[in-house]
Length: 430
Image (cartoon, rainbow, N blue to C red):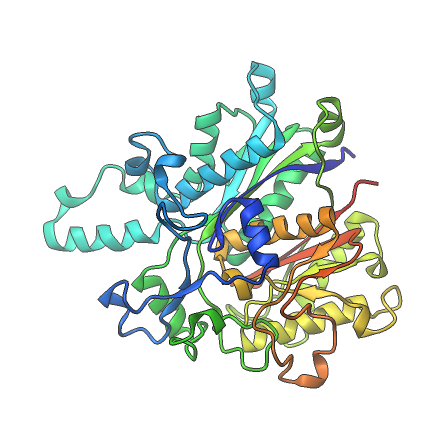
């Protein structure tokens, strides 16, 4: 089987534009969650008024400036989630040093980028326009802007990439599925290089209202937004919606070696499962999450004892964090696992960046790759009192501050509505 490595990273996150900047600010304990109270009156009636927004503007560190990434006309043609994907892909390609120019190189390079929701903004605004003005108020670009596969399509067109052009949409598991699927395209010789990840930008009143009505969002921290996303903390009350994109350049090992590429990590395993339980809630035992991680390690040929760090999905919801914690402990403390909970290292990036929905798995995979490459485990911010129930939360959740230690193997988890689960396993190149 052909081996797959990571050679490029690109990201647009609530911590700023750029994978390096986002990683640095994550390690420093920054938070990208802000208040929505003064941004629009449309949010006033919604119980949750916080979100993790990509910073914008020239005077803001890592601020998003469209002109830095898009040429004239792109803004009109592309929804925001596609714009973020294009920027993250551009950064990842530059980081990898891969610029396919020949027909053969372009035909062997593909794109696999998904989104959980796509351009809900276009659906929302066009519906209003149609209601007010009828057929002629609908833009001819309405459908192309909202289609989820257009993020991958725009990246493919911009760089003339004629390999696999694939899009994933599996709720909050999208980014991880996209990376896992893309790795298999390389393993099975459909491509030598793949740009893989996820993108999302749907923070609008309709989206917030929907998740709030489902009682999924944090509502207790509207006056202190930076404290609102609290993975594994006993005072967690729901997730915080975020936006952004993450794209990785995945490459066949010998192809990367031949061109002298820097290798961040190897994609060792990819595990998938279903909860088969409930539309939005995981089973209390975390069975689906356990199966995804177990299958990822089986694919990797590794034992639970080999795992040095888990980047958890942990969204700061009451049920979800408990179920995942149980799943991780069941896996990591079994017969082939660690000796005690204190040896199990887990953190969630969502305290800092919120929940990026379809982009979450991709951005968090980047953080897991960086952990392996730099031997440092990123912190879980806002974790002051692990628990509820406290007796179950006895692992090392890397609270508040990053921890330096050798990270040879890392797992990155993503779970989504409908009970869809994925686990990616990354390791140092062996």
